[in-house]
Length: 97
Image (cartoon, rainbow, N blue to C red; front, side, top):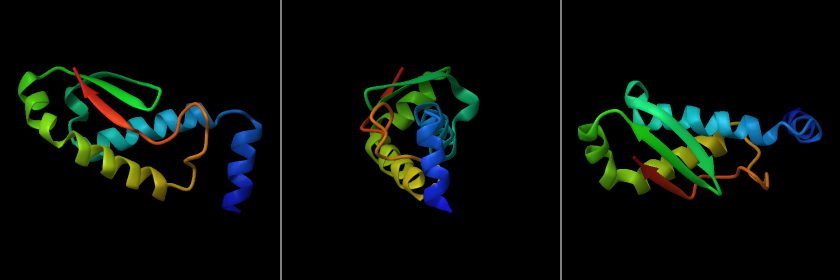
């Protein structure tokens, strides 16, 4: 059944948009700073997050690698995430603004 759902997502060409939303949800869950996140976007495996608090940003900065690792673990555990999508795969890097 899981493979059927993934194939449907690929055939409808919605994998990239769905992956992007799953990545944003993973950011909210792993970082715990959803209320301070002003904007975010994904480009070439790099997640850019703008935060409204410089204090929150400075506290998260040294933990970027760990955040990316936990986000990717969460994404790989999600049955809807299409890891081999050419446009949006796993997060490679996190940039905090």
